[in-house]
Image (cartoon, rainbow, N blue to C red; front, side, top):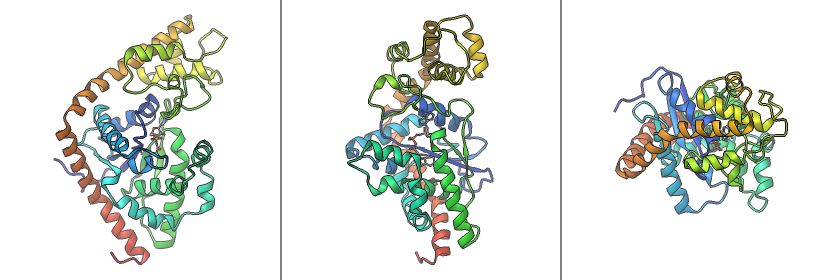
Length: 335
Ligand code: TYM
């Protein structure tokens, strides 16, 4: 296998939590771009399983979902020969760097994180310290690989900005250490909205399954969910972002067909919402079909999956170890 250790390409890193089966929001906001960025960048992609315990998860389920999420990455076109793809907990340097960064992050800035506010409002009985400090672990994920670009959906922008602030602060204090990262957010698909409440983002933890489409949903489920999608009473298909339901469907159609919103409006010109919904359903089914087929194949080959996870972790660790050594040394820790 080829090694990326001596590459001069800019680094990129991103991750997805294995909290449940991924949605088309995760696909269009992140995963789709990951696949297209593999050649141009030195790419690190991880299953963010440490992050997943900030909401309580059954250990056996977490283990199973981590492996399934890894398989889904491969099925979506992440190529372990071109990218370093791994499971976060296999590389303990992430948590080692977290401690160093934690001492350079402030309670005030962490308490301003929108996701912390939202999640703690939802799980008032489990506002654990991990939920609060989670953005520092995310900063460590990014900085430990010296990643320059972070391909994420719009909801993660604030966390990447916090990572920048921590990295700049650290460099000022201890001398040039970290590459300063930037979010890389797609023009369309950065915020796929719920099919039921189009003012809210599509989320895999939505209690109403009609709000989201999973990457692994069967065609008949996709058709049914699209039929129930909330639109409005205007009847005409235009590209007005304020008409959240219709605009969301047009955006999904655009990312599926790699076109612009204008192309999609032109495609549905003179048609009704029934045509829009069935057109979007067909486009999603077509987009997901090859991923679903490949997923079934990859998941069945446990030996291959385990081997790829092991190699990915070794490659990731080789890079991460160098950063942790450098950081610890600069801070006055002997290892
Ligand atoms: P997570 O697991 O919530 O989401 C994974 C990725 O999917 C994107 N995403 C969406 N994009 C568009 N529309 C949506 N409705 C939608 N829902 C989710 C997210 O923006 C994200 O890119 N903390 C991260 C995981 C993580 C990470 C990292 C990301 C851990 N360490 C380091 C980047 C770099 C998270 O919870 O993503």
